[in-house]
Length: 253
Ligand code: COA
Image (cartoon, rainbow, N blue to C red; front, side, top):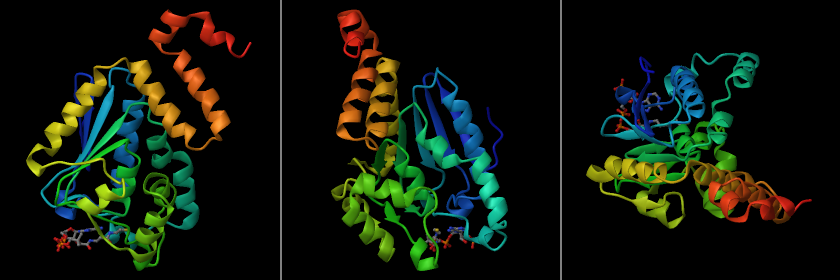
């Protein structure tokens, strides 16, 4: 699967790499990129061989400098935009991905760039990374999940601070706020992200997928519902079935 205009898709055994590939425009997120990513993620989601995915940006300067501002001038009508969103909702597709997604971030990570990163499960950043949500300063709102994902990950105070001011954060500030989990030297960023992907891919796939599901879906449940979800997902793992057999399934009888 290749030949995309704005992204490179590579499969290497049990891991996949998705590279945003418009370096001349700092990998700005365009309509074409939305369609390319939608196709790539759809295929990855259906591919049981892929156990973890690494996202990165081509070029030296950016993971992604946000929505393509040049396209804003040619934006479709609100009705058309709503229709496209209903048939090709990239952000819900991101949210529904069963495999762990790892973001290897460098340079500018702005607007849609940070929103893509926030849909990933593990974020590594090089020391030169600059994070920001400039939308409000441009008179718009983040519309790729940022108002929802950011507070869930970094907490409401940090999200309000970033979103209402458009202030940019350094890699260290992002680490302090839990936006990224590690800062990694630029030259080892991608190899480290891939090592991590390979390590995750070496674990039992049901255990990995169910752990991700329990965490992501659990965030939107009450604790009581979350405990039920955890129980059900835990019971599906091979080890649990072998070790406890009917004990797990009998809890709800
Ligand atoms: N959409 C479209 N093109 C973009 C872009 C974007 N969001 N961000 C950068 N580019 C393009 C520039 O137009 C420029 O293209 P050109 O060489 O054809 O003129 C190229 O990428 C390099 O950008 P440049 O501005 O020259 O780099 P810089 O290092 O001086 O500045 C930024 C980098 C990120 C500070 C600056 O490009 C910027 O502010 N971009 C917009 C960020 C933004 O507001 N995103 C929207 C979020 S909703």
